[in-house]
Length: 123
Image (tube, rainbow, N blue to C red; front, top):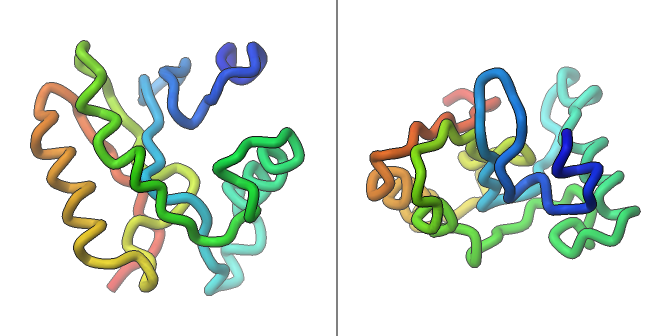
């Protein structure tokens, strides 16, 4: 990841990927609820980012809302394929419904982008 090597914020900036051009994390962190969570890449990445002094991960992998990022895609002028919430679970039980609705409102208002929300928990 070029952006990562250059010391930029890879969870905000465009990055090279086969299937996504940008990452948008309006929520960070999660809680482990199943054996599959034992090998969670986001948990490992959060520890790395915390060790690097990244402010958004000062609490490690504790679920954290990032309200200043909710409207970030509105600033991107060219169409992008966006990986939404690579570092958390938007539908976590502790994320308020109103906050989820704000995130989906942003996705709706940025129809030029293709948003790919990462969902790991089912109903």
